[in-house]
Length: 444
Image 1 (cartoon, rainbow, N blue to C red):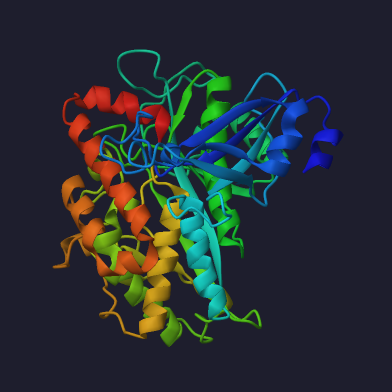
Image 2: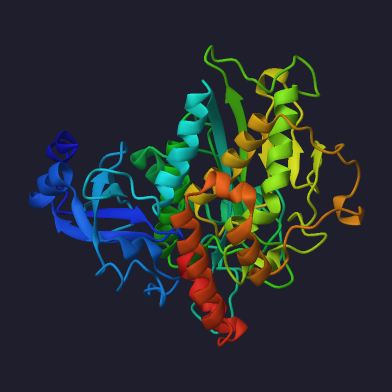
């Protein structure tokens, strides 16, 4: 890590940053000449900082604040090390960190440790999840009272329409995407295909599959930060909020995953289209945990505006082969690449919690060796299916008490997340829809 700074003497400041439960980067700005201290001894800030609400405020009844004297945690660098921050004007470096107790134990309320605990469960069974993340986002002109598509830097015109898989839509913002991909190279984020999507100024970029779930989550978290920063450099906003426009589709954050055994074999692959019993057991686990995990997949007031029938956002609990109306899709293609696509999460999620919830649920199913119901065919929205919780309060209540969730997340994290969401629900109720959009546009 020190060598990186020595090779980049132009870097004048560093940022040390960890993800809070909402996926917000919390940390400090440090002159580069003091970076060795952060690397060797870690940095410190209160454990409560990873449990702030969406406004960045303390949780009123959190036991992390007054009951413990707002005790510090020790934050140490992750394996990622330093990386450039191409969206800033001055040469700067970001050092991702995660939180530990004073005695070296992982802090259970840190979302990255939550994912790591799931990964360790896989390792104990000789298994390795392989993940790829698809992220949808909007480019938005938020300079006026009403959100709208930014004018094309090439033509000066606004295309007020959703343009699915339109090269013209991509080419309108070619300078932005070129700079974004260059920045991904600098940060070692494996950005792959970009497409235009169905919403106004909506796009999707896929990140390449990775056999390190922590790195896949890091990539998604850093990518969201990068996209929002680079958009501002180009004079507009980028947002991963679930539903900025009432009449257009919202943004999802889908995960494709398979599982390798100790010899590197895909345990979902049976040489055919159906997949193995292990695949079906993983599907069963994902379906069983879906009601309780809904708060992870839809963590904000705006999240539930996306989850309406006929919008390509799942509302029913189901699985299917090659069917994008279902919550769980088994894509077609080479048997060696047989995998599960989990389609429930919105773009506004915390990637660490999302991957922990999905991979943890799949492992619950593998451990239980239970079979799922029959896969559906046709339109899932027209089928009589059990439903994903459709409102914030129901999702909070189910997350708090669900037995499958308790197998995935530590009690402290469950408590902290519930307290956070109940506080946000209380204060969001006092705001107009426009005021809520203003909050979510830049944060999530």
